Length: 323
Image 1 (cartoon, rainbow, N blue to C red):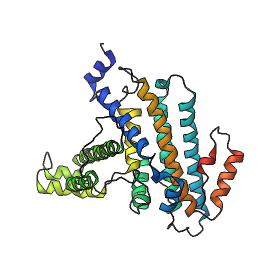
Image 2: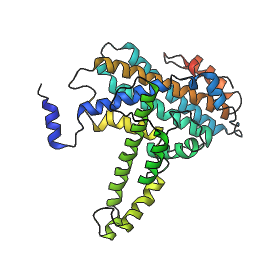
Image 3: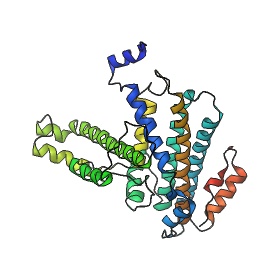
Image 4: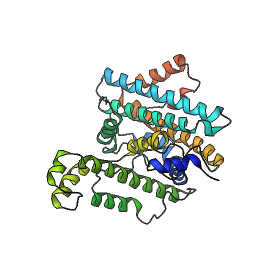
């Protein structure tokens, strides 16, 4: 079958082959869904993970920011749940589902940051940086949400990936069905996001005044490598960075891969369910942490208020936790 639009796109842009873009998208979320089904995310194990978390000195404004962001995350989760439940043609809404999944993730991350340091960021990029410093670096996440690269210098990335992978050889090219295959897919996506971020930073460096002063065309010379690696050392990749890239792929860069060409209806249906499940578990994990940090009793008051005042159809009880 001739794919007229795809051919037009290949003429004018660096268009990813839809088959490969689709494969990476569904396989990464399938891998996450497999791994969040593990015993690690049973309530008793989440509570055990956060048992040493100390309640913060009362900070009403920071707590309010955490509650506000969790309300926004809850709203995005409600939207996602509705898209999964109500549609009879999920191709129509799969992009919207990914956007809802992303904002559910983003606002949940922002709520955890608020419960930790009370800080508020103006951009998604800055939020991911603070997420690394406030949450990831203090090992506050349960795997697989904890996977990260703490430097984008090539040697550092290679070392970190070898520690993660050990003998695991699976990657994003196959649809995972076991935990080993799922971990392999996640390692592959983490490395791919690291490469994506490194290339983005390198392009930015090449536009800088410092780079142009060197009179070079690549990073082979020592001075150019030092300039590049100084920047790469400061940058990280974590779950929020990967979520941002995932949303960008679906919503901007690879415009047609989710709804064009080969019929993948069954995998789209599973993708929608996986998006909802992963977001649900991530929020549930975050609820345990935030409840342990904010003023004693206030998390329960927050949940009771939503049960009474929220006009969303989604029940808020999945965020009710015992501390």
